[in-house]
Length: 84
Image (tube, rainbow, N blue to C red; front, side, top):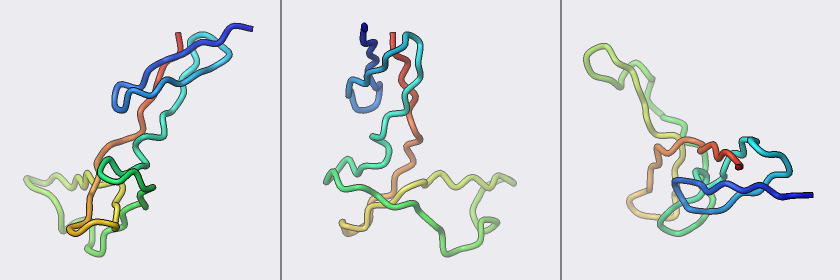
């Protein structure tokens, strides 16, 4: 059976699937780009309505690596890779 592959645009890893056109989620968004350790989900200690500008309440931080000082805050979202 043929294997289909796709390359992640963020990290460059090649992902494989058995079916053409499958969408595979790359796990690179969960790892710290500085040390390679798995990051933990970020939970703010301040209320969400504290953040924002001009009535926007967007908090872009998704993951945090606490192995650094200062801590590394990541806003990278999961990346979908299409296997062709």
